[in-house]
Amino acid sequence: MSPELAKTRVAILGSGNIGTDLMVKIVQRSQTLELAMLVGIDAASEGLARARALGIATTHDGIEGLIQSEHFNDVAIVFDATSAAAHLHHAERLAGHNKRIIDLTPAAIGPYVVPVANLEAHRDAPNINMVTCGGQATIPIVWAVSQLAQVHHAEIVASIASRSAGPGTRANIDEFTTTTARAIEAVGGATHGKAIIILNPAEPPMIMRDTVYLFCDDTDQTALTRAIEDVVARVA
Image (cartoon, rainbow, N blue to C red; front, side):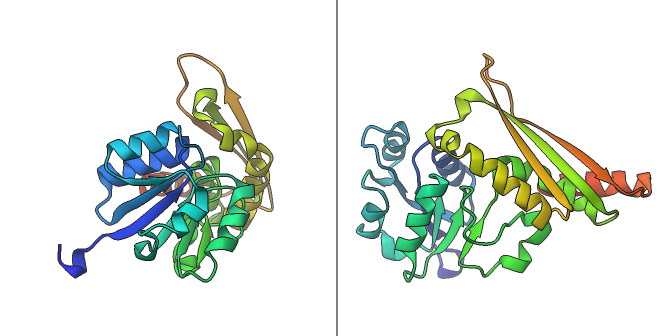
């Protein structure tokens, strides 16, 4: 592969549901990223086993295993799919190593980023926070409406299958609601934001469903519909 077409090498911290899902997406779909290593803390992790089966380097020694690995110097981006508490330590250990960090936890050390709304403003930030799954699914709609009318209150309800929520997600429930609510205000433009998460134990597992409630000033309904349809198409 020529240098101009070379893929950016990345590492993923966290071998749970989110980290494993991201691994599969990078391996199967990405034209620009190459996964150098999947990092976990449990040697018996199913995610690490799946990575090894795909020929991807792994370590169960956490962030230290990544830093000490032969792949570390080649890694340009580190995705953190662990927990909010763990990310605080990871960010501290990665400081000074010139790695771009994409935080998939609710830790929010760096700026909130919802790509359709504010990616360009934070493209060069060393650590960006992707809010939460519920935030990424709903804030674009809040943002689209706020471009046309003052949104006084925005409330989102994220319902996800209990089976899809691993230990990291369950440990982050409080951080999920706080971070999402703050991002609804900071990125979505609402005066007041609120977030609720529901873990649904139904079998077979349900598909994630997000509901958005807005209290806003009157505006042209045709323009509002067009703005929402446009932002949904851009995200999809």
